Image (cartoon, rainbow over all chains, first blue to last red; front, side):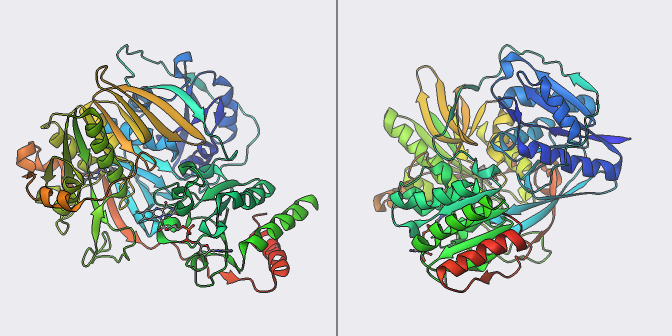
Length: 331
Length: 267
Ligand SMILES: Cc1cc2nc3c(=O)[nH]c(=O)nc-3n(C[C@H](O)[C@H](O)[C@H](O)COP(=O)(O)OP(=O)(O)OC[C@H]3O[C@@H](n4cnc5c(N)ncnc54)[C@H](O)[C@@H]3O)c2cc1C
Ligand SMILES: Nc1ncnc2c1ncn2[C@@H]1O[C@H](COP(=O)(O)O)[C@@H](O)[C@H]1O
């Protein structure tokens, strides 16, 4: 067997992130092509129960770093654990989700290992020597770069959520589960998470959502945002916003989609009263299906939209909410 | 409080981009360059900290990303906003580097400066790497907090408390100084350089450091040291041409839901 593929599988509060399973899925596909084992590493407290889920989604071996002191994320501790595991396991690549945690951990780990890093990849292809050709959006999605590590060893890559399919959960089968030794360093970590505060607002996180309904300045005022929220509720979707709306104080920055907000790639993105400025597109142009509702037929969002409806959102959005409810009720 | 701010000069976000010969880089001819938007938050935060404490020194530090760029202009903009001095690191040997070599060079430059706090952007909007700041901290052996939208400093205790944006909430992180913070939108509202500020900036020191100044071997930096190579740049896959759904609103919406259900299969 060739050098393995290591996947850092992020969990929070004992629940695996969806993108962790997506990364495992991609690792399994690459591993099958090149005869490599897929090693899943999970770090946290009270997480032993996750091994089965990881095995049924493609892990051929599960490595657990579990400690009561690991309840909160720490870049320093997680880097130390993964660098140690990597030195020992010699993976050809280390994959993880491009989440707040993954994007924070991957650069530190790559710098520690002095290896190549590619953030936010949307496609991977493995060559025979184990080099990965990684495709990643740059310039706010205006271009894509195809990149390759100078040396195909311990390349660190983060994968954009919602892009790589997870494997269908297979039948439960036993895979080896091992515990990683955690070497306590009394002087570290120096940066310590004191508290995690849940944000008020949308129940579904934007970057993980399958469907997003976003509102822009076309909504005219914060009180009308409920139109967008009602449609989102009917669709079980997350709520997003343009920067114009965030700058006006109608919604906090956590809702902002775009260059200086979040990058999302849902299956469906519905833009209501958003003109579709290039900086907004930077955050959403990789959505699979885009719907635009806008009264101005020349709005740039229509250039991007799979389906566009030209008209008054105050009329169209409530109608859409009703139609969606009817469709759901019929099932 | 001595603060070093890492500032990258990038093409303005509304730029129309085309590829240079060879297809591994953009054509920079005719582009307008600006201070990376996230780095503006970093500069503004440094200014506000200095104003609050009534004392301090702010150095803005930039590595020339490409021979055709003039980051001196970005640094002058930061000086005009109120930074005290600027350092440009520039050397032909740095050409063709990646995020890692960028971090290596910047870390070597920072080592020559006194600092209690390092500030940088969450991400440069050209390479979208979201890595250099974090890697600088790792190479310097100091902690970092990334994607910060609120920062509290306790200079006497030499500690910082930062709010970092995560999915569905924030992490409240406490760290000792010196620490590196990567700045996210929401941290502050960057000021525009004032006219007197622009005049004053012309008199402020802007030093240029080369590879020799910072003492790095040529084979560790630039294309020679890069861990990641760009094979090619390409346009994003074309979106299949969209469709405007006609008809009066109730009909159009019915048709839209049918298409989402039957054709796009997303409902
Ligand atoms: C450095 C930089 C970073 C930026 N980052 C971001 C970012 O991260 N995210 C972002 O979104 N923007 C960003 N912007 C701002 C961006 O350029 C636009 O200004 C912003 O996206 C506009 O928001 P909007 O579409 O809601 O508003 P507008 O552009 O004002 O558009 C409102 C739209 O609503 C339509 N409308 C009005 N009334 C109705 C109605 N009754 N029914 C239907 N439609 C209606 C109008 O036709 C119009 O198209 C950035 C800009 C810069 C310079
Ligand atoms: N060439 C550079 N000169 C100075 N700072 C830089 C440079 N490249 C990156 N940075 C800093 O690192 C941050 C993240 O950059 P990146 O990892 O390229 O997305 C930027 O916002 C800057 O603060």
